[in-house]
Image (cartoon, rainbow, N blue to C red; front, side, top):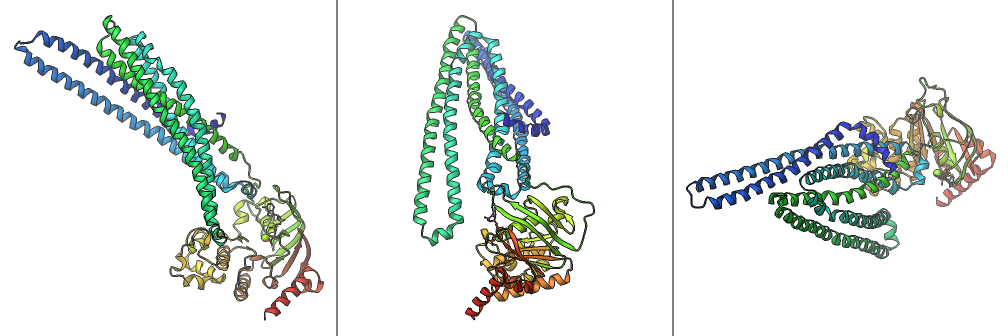
Length: 600
Ligand SMILES: Nc1ncnc2c1ncn2[C@@H]1O[C@H](COP(=O)(O)OP(=O)(O)OP(=O)(O)O)[C@@H](O)[C@H]1O
Ligand SMILES: [Mg+2]
């Protein structure tokens, strides 16, 4: 329960809505009780009038009297309608305040969580599955919202109505009150038991739903693999199994539900029986009027819903507490990389990137990815990085962007320690095309323009031209407005890579980081992209490029090349000097040359 205290700050933010909410609940409850009193008066009057009618039978005044009775009854009817209308107005305002407040809090909470999630570093996203993050931001917030809205509203409602009704009943007749309320304790115990049974079931149902969700999500996103391995029938069987479990669990919950409501009705009926029985005795004894019995019948029926709601609210609150605990768990999570306010006047030296004795171990796996890396890249130059799979090339790029903090050593951008720069000072200068291309399910235009403020069509087209994908795009019937399906399924691997390059180039970055983005591009296209990048660098003297590659042809024109093996730099220098060394680089060169000749 303590987890729910995290919501207090939101209550405080919307305290006036909450206050008016409580006031209108109390007001609407008072107008729920008045009609019962009107009915009592009306019934007693009718009783008296019927007696008088008998006395006046056959007299002239009788007709006038009948008219009078009709008029008074019409008046009572009008009063009842009026009271119901006033109650309706208050109910309207209850919803407009409390439910409205719960929606506002839900909105604030969801945005707060989203903002917080975004600040968390990549390591956090490695540890937690997307589905889990999604369910916390969607379902858990929703559960808390149910508690804030309906939960809170019915709680206030139940308590105020209970106090008002029981006080009114006691004021009329203590004995009758006790008998009328006799079944209620049994009812509340029963509700509690049934609710905990339902809750246990609903948890199992929720879990099964989550399994079903994950399963379908995986099957659809991996549909190409499923089809290629003809696993459709197997997937179908598995799906049928999971839905079967889901159905069975739901059926059981429905059964409990089906028994529950008739039982509630039975107990409420019992209460009415007691009311009429004991009430009649009291009327005979002269302590009560017939109108009182009618009034009591209404009161007991008024109490039924709040008591049922109480059990429901208990469940809502328990669920909300569990959900809030899950939300708090992630809110407590600190971003591993903390950015500062930044420097007022960052340096702008000629050295674009420099690293000194940088080492890095992935915190969650303990894999030592980089060891004692030192190098320098000047403004306007190109750095090539090459090395066997898993040697640490991508890790190096991520450290420059400060996706992770190095364990030791220092990294500078333009002569500033990257830890001194703010997030925007650091990353706004960079254009990054990651190794595993990611495109959003949006148009090609939006994908290229993603990292740029106020892009123009001409700029987007220019970026696409540099990345040698413009011709492909205009060949599509809808050109730049072509929608990329989820994960870019409408495009070839090479086209996706080139759109990703265009996106990075679009930012006119001072540092362009291309992580193995030419792997699915043919030699001719590769050469045209490399030439464009060379021209871009010569036009923008401040721009530097870091290019990771497996093929030497991509980095031959680099001013400086790092060869990384097993997390350390084994060789570095220009293409010519590395060839002369006769190490890894020259071996790869010979091998790739031989392969080329074989093909030709
Ligand atoms: N997020 C991660 N968490 C833990 N370990 C990681 C993570 N990413 C990479 N590693 C490990 O760090 C090492 C370096 O990986 P990295 O991705 O930098 O290699 P790479 O040189 O880019 O390889 P490739 O040429 O295949 O792209 C590998 O041993 C890899 O298993
Ligand atoms: Mg890599």
